[in-house]
Length: 234
Image (cartoon, rainbow, N blue to C red; front, top):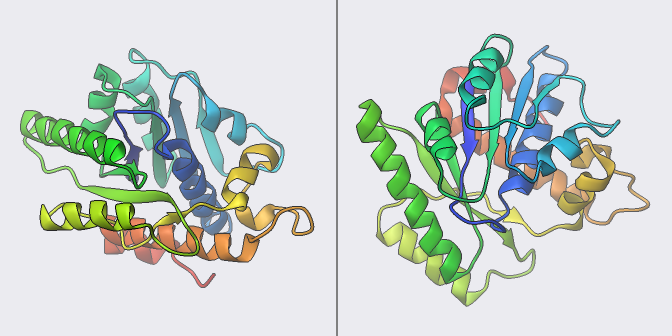
């Protein structure tokens, strides 16, 4: 069992899209292995919940919606009883609920677009993680995920920001979540990118590869034991 938290101190960084892509890919891989995925939506906008409630979403996803500060820990503990992975989508701000979720995380994923504003907010989130680590006297793994990057070429600004992170010794995903129509389309259709109608949505095959690589790297960061349980040939 692993708890994966998506955290950002600002909205618009691609947090919810990344959470949906990871949840759907883990559920797709886990369906035949009877591995349940819990999705805890603690974002007041409830975009993850709207996606999870669509008819094409995998049946092995357990949704915990309308989660607030006073119900978050209860939701996590309930999900721990029945789920191989717990994905927590938090509000795009710094709050007590964010701190509580981070303290229970096996991995915190920090989405960041290729802008200086996003980079500065990512640093704020990392400071929050380190404070939580000190409070609970446990190292909390975290990694920065570059989101909505161009499928054609990485901009100079994005490259500069990534270099800043690397020079500061901050962990950065090798995989980037590319800006693709298919990732936006699952909000409308539900399910994973693999379930999308190929005549209506472009670039599905590349999105499938991107989602698979993202999930694989997440699992590799957490533990080898979980990797053996879930990773199969695409």
